Image (cartoon, rainbow, N blue to C red; front, side, top):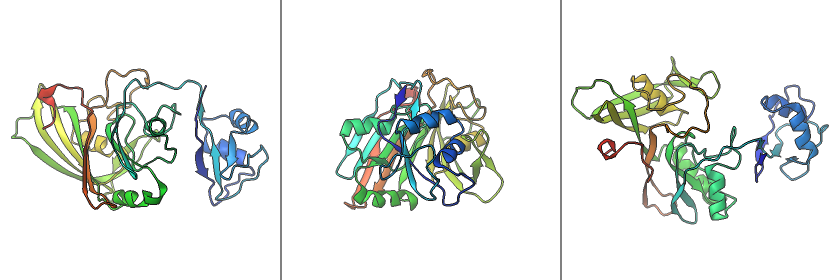
Length: 302
């Protein structure tokens, strides 16, 4: 059994949808966890209010109250790839994430995630990721080191003042036009089924990307991608919409069977560069990933 070293937090909904107790809410909120497991966690003191008071099986549902619980899984996969700290100052940490490592706990992952690794590295339990990368995607992730300046860096993302450049590799059977070629994509992305997938659908655009094909060699194309919005799986869906799904994509265009122990085919998508004006120093910050896509120098992006 792998148990989280730090509590996860959830705020109970402002409107009670018929839950007489906190236990009833947890059972409804997390259908993948049985009622018996929640009862055991509560009996062991692993579920408590944010202020620290443990709940019991009869604790009433209290709208908008913050609740803490400790995630646990029977067997947690170990990701055999190293992360790196690219930069750190008093306010900001930039980490270079390998493929397959989640940024935060989720699913089968409790402690084996970038956030927990960095907390162990730095001893700073106040670390908070400022954005996310898919577990399958490698590259740069920014973290806030302290609460006092967190909002300043978060606002860079909400205001679109962060420039992020990705590279991807896809199979390109026939492409004889002059390179580079560029596409501007604007469309609508919404949730699909299963719930961890998204889809492109009709409606007002909420996702925008610029995609450039830089070179083609041995049937593989190297693409430079810029996401101007931050929808989940946006670049993966936009590459698929062009007819070139990213190499080794286990979600699109066809959902493949889960195999958490197979590390032989990492998704060929890399968050390679990030730049912004630092809101505290007013200096231009530019960082580069040291991760590589799984192809030799002949296919490395320029």
